[in-house]
Length: 115
Length: 110
Image (tube, rainbow over all chains, first blue to last red; front, side, top):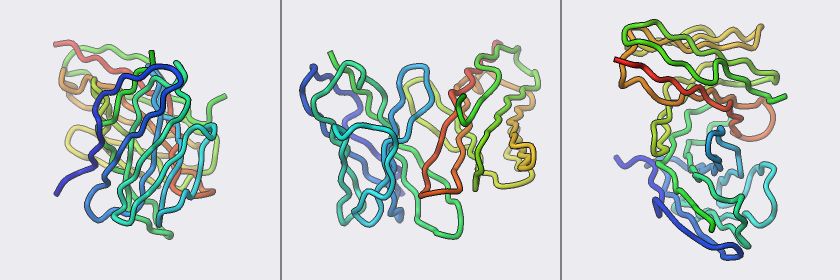
């Protein structure tokens, strides 16, 4: 049973470029959350996708967008990259249960460097 | 002030010592997670708590809902326990958003 997978593992871009990061959730999971972790900081919530819709969003600009596909996999897109977007981007999956808090399983992350 | 505060930020101890990492939060929550992050980034979920105490091997996690405080304990610490330990809370409001503490960097020396 594969856990959460992310691709690519590392990525180097220049300012102004666009990037797409990908996440496949743990088998059986239907909810995907994205987090940004700057060096030395705790992760910050970007947004969460469920049933192919953005369900909740953190305090990130519109340059950050996403998508969830029918197979529950997800993409994170960042446009007009800034140096400050350099971070580890983490994807976490879980199973939607409205009456219970469920464990989120994290992927290994994609380390994005913007030069 | 952050909604989730951890202490200490850095902790260095000798192998075999009993370790305690603390987490305080200021919002209503439905659950609290303790996570472990090794160099390179991968995060592993250690515990999810909504009340009381949980134990897994040498790890023990407790939560006091009234005091809005949780602790992670490691007994008989080992150098392989060296990692960043992160406390994260799931808010009552909204979807399953997690709010993270800044993490505690633990180093266990042999």
